[in-house]
Image 1 (cartoon, rainbow, N blue to C red):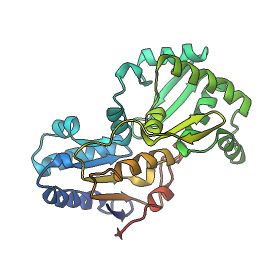
Image 2: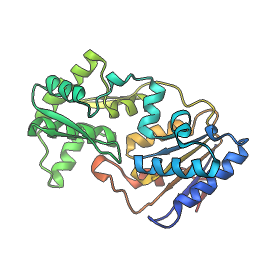
Image 3: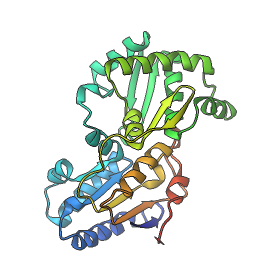
Image 4: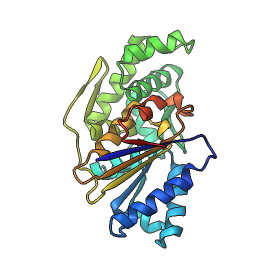
Length: 273
């Protein structure tokens, strides 16, 4: 598998370059748009790619969205794991009630429409604990390390004991009723198991998308350590011939959710532009 990296600032023409790459890959793969995966880290980037690719290839956008692999990284994991809609913790009223009941306090989930990151609000102690948990998993680091780093940067996180109380309650409730949040999907697919006291590697769940021979990861500077692991699993699938990464190495706008451009730049690229 060959890896190419495209680096450029916002507005410099990366999207146009990616469309040219996709067009060339489509021809090289026998004209099959479903042999190409376009995984973005934001819904906005994914929507733009679907719109422009469907026009360039004369394929209805709904077909690319439904049957193809033009998806956010979270969506790829969701589909390949076969998680049912009722199992996913999202912004629906039923999910919000479930979270509040599980934690026994008023807490609600807010999904960032662009990035897919989860933010918790409501009861200050419980919400702060779950936000620490979200960042800990995104960064693939022990919870204690997350708390210490946040405290060192003046963010006033809860104590480890406070975090552990609410996180344990949340995780036990999810385990009992087979519920998953978005970080759970990424972790299962990447082959990671998170516990309050640390994390460890396990066999990844789900299969890689069949028939995909080329992957493009756009806005790759916005990948967290957890998302980056999912991307590597996709890129090193047995049928994949080429992987392209595009991003701005000087900007990661979702740093609040654990994104870091160093993951994008650490891939062993065979070619870079």
